[in-house]
Image 1 (cartoon, helix red, strand yellow):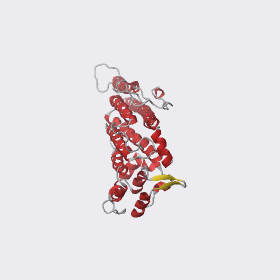
Image 2 (cartoon, helix red, strand yellow):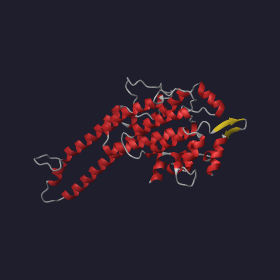
Image 3 (cartoon, helix red, strand yellow):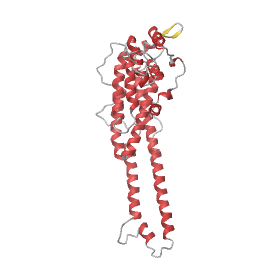
Image 4 (cartoon, rainbow, N blue to C red):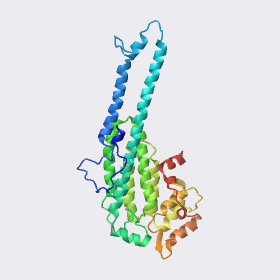
Amino acid sequence: ALSEMLPTRAPHQAPQLPFDEEQAAHDLGVDPAFWVSLERIHSAAKAFDREMWAEGRSGGSNRVWEILTMNRDGSGASNSMSIARECRVEFFTDLERRGESCILKALDTLSTHIQWILVTGGEAMSASGGTRILQSLTGSSGGPYAMAGGSSLEAPNSPAVKSLTYCLRVQFVHIQAALTPQSLSAFWTALSMRLYDILVARLLQHYYISTVGAVILARDVEALRSVSMLAGTEHEHWDILRELLTLYMTPPDALKIILAGPEGDASSGKGLFQRAGRDHSLVFLSRRVDYRYRSAQGQRKSGWATQLLDDLGVRDPSDGHVNIGLFSAAHIAENRT
């Protein structure tokens, strides 16, 4: 019944951003009542177990524990107690399995609504005349971080991220009240990784980043990282992403040092090549708005990009198929262990 409360899809229509924070926060598909119900079911099960067994009580409780141990001659008591204990374990194992299933579905529902706000909503707001100009130059719509120079930097975050972090902070309060500290840590860590994967997959497949857009993107990443660190562990993927964002704020003639260290040697084990990985860094670099341009022959690399790759003596991994799975938070965590 709890699982059926959760929608499997986000709304088809893009959200109207930013959300009014004077109003109740969007529940991201998971009604607060879901978390209240989950906590009450768990509490009721524990209370039922205590009352049914009354283990260690004295004084005519007539509960399971007393009934199974009252046979003074021991006939059948040992076998009955063993069976009862097996049933007790089976009950709580099944309860835990059902609870985990509900929680995983809640995680899926939150993820689809995160994508709905961050991607559907964010891109709907960026569909402007400036986007169409960029598309004529690069052959791509560019996304919300491809704004041209002179764009306003007054807003601390993009409307999509501002709205999303507001909703996640409200949602966190309900989740924290329902789960044990250990379960909360595991759940929020998984949500942090999902959030990162949604942003990075969209960035590497569909977005281009301008110097001005990189400032907004850096603020957005900081806001998403902050809400991700409300609980849990394994948030290093956000720290690596923050470092990679320097690739969009650095002039082309200084990129060699950023990537390979002061010596500019790709094999030196320094710079972003060391901290984030060589291919990882180069794929992120390829999302600069000035990395490629549109010509009569199709997409061409800028002169500075070709020269940089030649100086470093490396191939461009973005020339071929990019396996987005290799850029996931889980993959980053595996490589760090």
